[in-house]
Image (cartoon, rainbow, N blue to C red; front, side, top):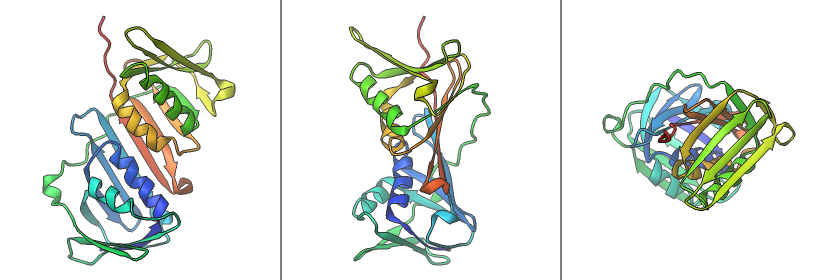
Length: 247
């Protein structure tokens, strides 16, 4: 059972964060809020979302696992206007989620959770280099690199105390360096990994709205990117595997 209301922008941002990587997921609901963890079909990237009950205007739920069609949900939420309040209602025993906002009322059949991959176990990895910067700065750098190449190197130079992003094409090159005074915070450690821009571009569209994005890096390790939603009442985390450079 789920009965809740939430600001349209908050819920839309949550769905956008998931839609950047996956088209469906298992959404876990209980008295504390909703959460999910899912990987993309290529097993390259993972997204986790935790939306606490405080992110909702009203919230009441009993433990359940819902199969959500993210792509369909994103299209529905695209109809909502800024400032709308979204009503979510799943009666006990029902497999049809009712959504209402403005003059619209939808009834959406949930997916069979047995057809959806189980939640992955996040890998236990130590990423020593940590950076905090604005989402717009990270998103802009990703867009700039996409003009040059299909991959981008993210790294930290601990001696110079800079966070850098670098892309190389067949003939062109771009590098952005951000020092301590241009970052929110920096925990320097030797770090450099190469990543696919196809994934980062989609993630960047969501991260670009955040005032603070936390990036954790290692050497040829995945990158962990985390940011908050709904004034800190929700949390999103991405984990993206590196592309290993040929010698």
